[in-house]
Amino acid sequence: MSIRVTVWGENVHEHKNATVKSIYPTGMHTCIADALNHDAGITARTATLDQPEHGLTEAVLAETDVLTWWGHVAHGKVEDAIVERVQTRVLQGMGLIVLHSGHFAKIFKRLMGTSCALKWREVGERERLWVCNPGHPIAKGLPENIVLNNEEMYGEPFGIPDGETVFISWFEGGEVFRSGVTWTRGAGKVFYFRPGHETYPTYHNAEIQQVLRNAVHWAAPTGALWAKPHGAPNIKHPPEVIRTPDPNAKGDTAGGPGHK
Ligand code: ZN
Image (cartoon, rainbow, N blue to C red; front, side, top):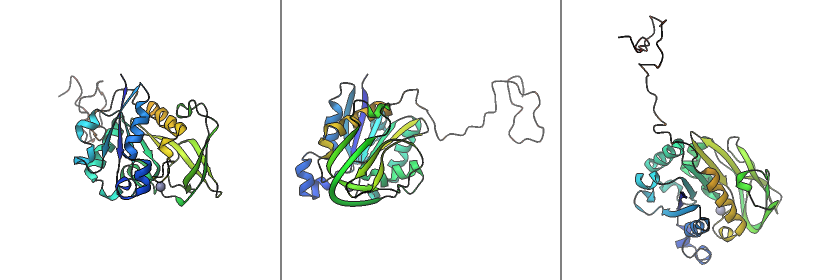
């Protein structure tokens, strides 16, 4: 069975900026979904901010193995209830790939628990994206580095918790940045991938598209989904009989099999 991906796009710049519209006439999300659908093992669909429930209904998320997220100017318009719903699914095991300016998305900041702040400069300089671990599944089939002739600069310090760094970028102006980092949250795998400023054709780049496909395969759930990640049940009937319960305990520890 192929991996079911939902490609979420804010889809705002595409309607307000002629340059973005010319590069991505049907939206960045469509370009990304098309790139993913080149892989016979992936079935990608799209969802956007303007749709009811931002296109991320319970039903859509229930059928999503991996969610990708591109947002920028409208992070604040994403409803908290939807963020909560996405977080729950990640903790249950859904993969999440956060792209470029998604570093400030509510869902990413919530999952990281840190500032997610960074430096930036937009002059269209060269970016050289180095593979740190050629053996990592997300780097499969890639050259030693990927060159993007025009990109926005993101620079360190990047306010993220420690994770596994798969890519580090060097920029023409001299800064460096952890451009590809992985974490797990609950049963879910999370990957942040930096390139993808809206006024450059980054998501048309074949090597960037390969990273996205690799990341989907890496982030897909591998085990059974955790049904209730937020639960904290009081287990009154343990699998073994507890023969020496503390008489002062308040947790009803004497309630095992064979006890009243
Ligand atoms: Zn940008």
